[in-house]
Amino acid sequence: MATVTIYGIKNCETMKKARAWLDEQGVPYAFHDYKASGVDRGRLEGWAREVGWETLINRSGMTFRKLPDADKEGLTERKAIALMLAQPGMIKRPVIETGGRVLVGFKPDAYATAFRR
Image 1: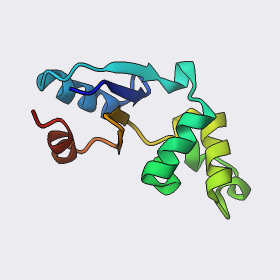
Image 2: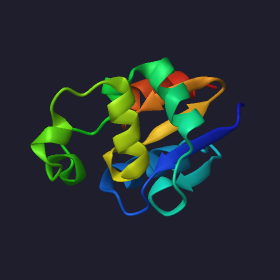
Image 3: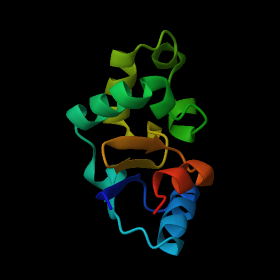
């Protein structure tokens, strides 16, 4: 099985669900807390190429909602990536890298397909 890395924030409820799902299925993974350890620009840009920056940005989270309107208006990929680098809490959770694929959010059906044995 491909190496699996799950990126997110330790205490996020969605992260807890995703990690529990992986544990229940016996999928070994490494965890990267991007709130504590950050995320590098190259990785974030790679995710954006794979899934689209609009998929990566968590517009419903408090971090995004607390932004000044000027920051939220006219979002482009470049502006969104800069915001996510500055405030990783704006990245939708979890982001999973596995075998060259990137999965965003907790979707049990997509996980079952991706981790089919």
